[in-house]
Amino acid sequence: MNRGYAGYYKEHYLRSSYEYAYARYLDFKKISWSYESEVYDIGYKLYKPDFFLYDENGNLTKIVEVKSRNRNEKAKALNALEIISKRYNIDCELVSYEELLEIYKKLPFSLTATINEWINSNSTTINKAAFGKLNGHYNMVHSEETKRIIGNHTKKLWQSNSLSKQRMVEGLRNSGLSQKGKIKIPREERTCIECNSKYIVIRTSTKKYCSRTCSGNSAIRKATQAYVIQRNDIHINIKKFIIKWSVSNRELVLSIPYNRISSSLAPLINKIEELYGVKDMRVISKAVFGKDCGRKELLKFMKKVCNENVC
Image 1 (cartoon, rainbow, N blue to C red):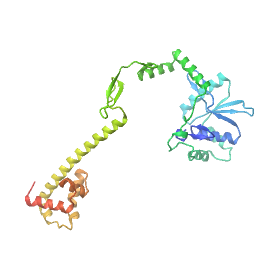
Image 2: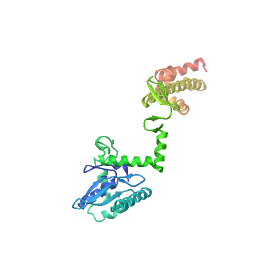
Image 3: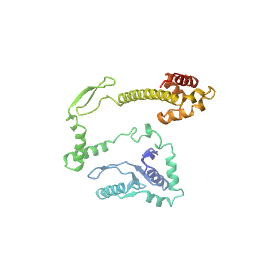
Image 4: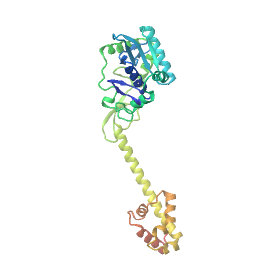
């Protein structure tokens, strides 16, 4: 089940292409349905099934959960549906890819075409920013009944000694809290080394910046400084190499005409590229003069080196 293919269908925020395919099947069969409209307490957690099917009189006839081909997810869903079926006396069914294939064999349109229809729809979030109405939580508010169920379930967990409570307590401890609003790990105020703003962190934190923006700005500045230093070192080494190469190839340098500079200096340029990763004549000229003076001035410099026997 690709969670990227989530989106709206008939004002319901469906979370996968398989869910859309099942909804299209229900509509074709003219079966009345709703989506994630009830929450059930199954003991170890609250569970919200996908589809609720109704008869002509609006009575609930079946709950259907749509899952991917992942075996673990299917096993968890089956366990939850069995509990709901026994505890609430409701017929439940799990539908996955295999079941959808069988369902669509009897329909005048294919499963593949339906899934592609959903993927290419403007209502899905795949390859789109999931903000505004494409966000599944947009303008969503729990009903009072749902709030009551969630509250009672949380209270029940807190009063128990279950694994869920242990995880809840562990999560609170890791966040520095053992009770809501009660700080357990000491905090301290620090000054951002980038913008000098004040911020609060736990004492054991290695955080030096107040935000990612400051951290990023500092990293960019340091990287730029490192690049400039490295570039200057490369320029110095290129100039030294040109002087050394000119002396070693004195006769060649002195015989090069000014109208054949590029081809004549090709061996030098290739060697500089091999050693320093630079082959642009403008950069090489800048390494020698501090600015781009052109290949003609570079050749003059090399001839001067040869005549003065500089090494």
